[in-house]
Every structure is written in C-alpha cells, then in structure tokens.
Image (cartoon, rainbow, N blue to C red; front, side):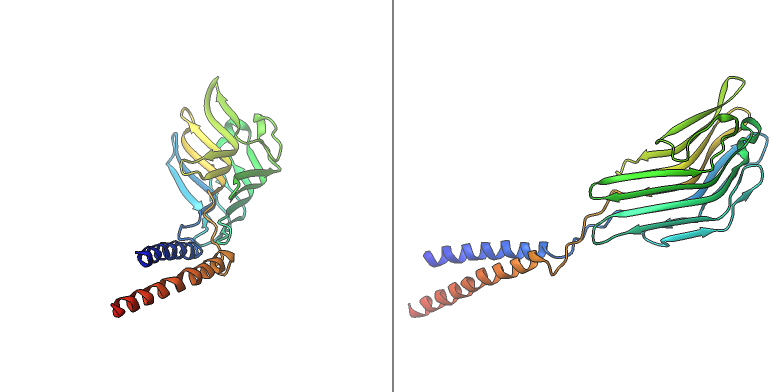
Length: 254
C-alpha cells in the first residue's frame, strides 16, 4: 500500500511538472493587431456623383507593414501630397503600433462654406503595450479658414461644427479617438462628416491609425521557468521509476 501511494504522489508531481514545462513554452495566443491608412472617403454629394475612395497606402502588422502613395487628387473634394504609413508588432512583448502621415492636405469639399481647409502635414499615431493603449495626432500648419484657429496638437475629439443658415451641415473632428469594442483604439487625425443639406452626406478621414490591445508576450523557452521545470522533472521522475522497479521486484518475490 505504501508503494502505491508513493507512486501516485510521484505521478501527480510529474503531471504538475509537465504542465510547468509546457507553460514555459512560447504562448499560443496571437499578439494584437495594428493598421493605418492615409485617406479614406465615402460621400454622397448633393448635385454630384457619389465619391468613394481608399484606403490609400494601407498598412497592417500582418503585412504589408508599410505603405506609400504619391498623391490623392479628387477634384473639388480632396488633394494631398505624399502619404506614408506603417504598422508593427513586437512578438516578444506583445506590443503593437501604427502611424499615418499625409502631406500637403487641401480639403476643397468645404471650401464654399469655410473658405478652405488645409494643412502642411496631418499625422495620426497609436501604440499599445501591456500598460494600455494611447494615441495622438498632429496637424502642422493647420488652416481652418472661417472656422477659427486650432493648435497643431489638438486635444482628443476637438470638434468644429460647420453651419449654413443656422443649420449644421458638417462636423470637423480633429484628433478623433475611438475606443472600439475589442479594446483597440482608432485615431483619426482629421474626420469630416457631412450631415445632409446642401453638401450631402458621408465621411472623409485623413490619416488614421488603429492598434491594440497588446497581445500576450511570448516567454523565452530558455528562461528560468524552463530550467526549474526540468530540474523538478528529474526530481520527480527518478522516484517514479524507482517505485515501479521496487513494485515489480516485490511481485516477483511473491
């Protein structure tokens, strides 16, 4: 009876150690994701054809991890210079990040009611680590025309309403930050929404970055956990074999 109990205890210990060694192997959970694009629009314009284009220069952490587009030229709607984007994942830490930059932005869509809207550089950035997800936007040389003045690094979700004859026809949001249902964050450096009326309906986004949440970090297989597990495996494994041999010997003697 004593031998049987010892063997059971040793087997239980062996199972526990095996679980420990398996736990020291690389995690199987997929890391987080990240993406970015320079411009995207879907508009139904009053008295004109609908316009849908983009995303331009799209990049994702799964690849392609970078994107470049020479220029967007949509007459009476949007003109840009070079668009650059990137998205990355660090499998060791689980962290992800993304970035989008659009140069020489000119938004002619609102020119008749705002006097023009332009910026030398429009950037969105997002980063996710085990501590959380953060993002920011920068609009260098921003000119909102008759809508007023806003600094190059506006606070999150800075909104400016566009009115015609006392009615809101559009909304311009700078450094828009959207917390998505899956825990990720989307940063839209410039988001214009047409609300109906003389302009039409739809959305236009310039420089967008999405990331997170961070994935699980992958432990090193040669780390301390693996060495401890192997040591305990040897400690428990030997008694298991010895107990089995003793039991076979006792049975043979009987």
